[in-house]
Length: 384
Image (cartoon, rainbow, N blue to C red; front, side):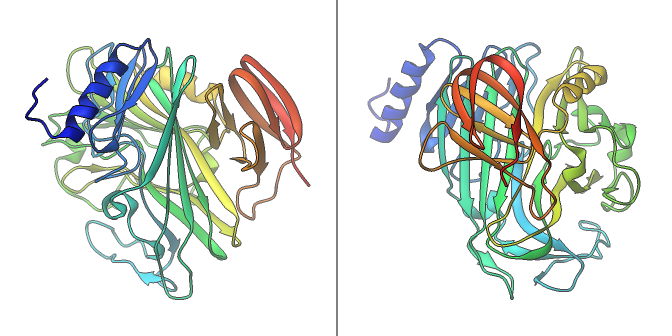
């Protein structure tokens, strides 16, 4: 190793060499606090500095095929918004980038480009790696206060060419209709279709790459808006990577009802903006969505994975296990294994919540003690 490297880079390089000797799964900190992750199926990086949130652009590596995501990042997070031009801070529309869809900002800035540095940590479990990232919005539109907290959890299981992800908001405001804008799975870089063969939308079918040669607005075609038609059985957005034996890269929202709006349009790249929530909240309320993001060999494989995880909306993890839950799961501050599940905003709470538990250990969820040994779905009563 060169002695001419700055000391911080030498320390990071030594740390990664040590991590590389560990058995799979493994993770460690690299340059600028980036988290480098490896399982038997994937490699990925999460960068808490610079362009932040989600999985870093072009770092999701599929060991089976050698594919990379070719994106600006996966599960990338923007800002909190509301519908219509009235209220909040002005949002530019009536153009080819945003179409004629009137909206306004509730809290800013755009996390991915302007937060610059966010908090993060990770754990390496027996057969998974989990990463957490979080940040509070620092600006608010007139009539609102800043301080809503965004919290993201990513889980990379062994034996899977995909990872689980969840974004959660704890609102600092009472809002009649609020949603979080993200990229799902992530924008697609290309030059006249050179990087992909087709797009698949579960609510719109298969679309050839040639449909994205020229720019068009989000409301020009392929637009999904909740309430404009039936909620789809599955919410899958994917692109087939160009090349022999190349896979699909997909982003699947596990509870379609939580999707407020989704774009798939050309603006120099294929823009995969998606908005989650679109629901009333009071101060302190939460809402969340959960996804599967990764590589698949066929649409049928995506559908089978989506069906097996249908309805879940939030994610939590310890070093011993991870929990994929309906509602919004939260870890209590006074105990690593204490959790509670709360409703989505002001939407009515069900009588019970399903939780997919994976790993080994004990969890207490809404007061119910559960022994986790392997993987199973449990029912947890809603707290009054």
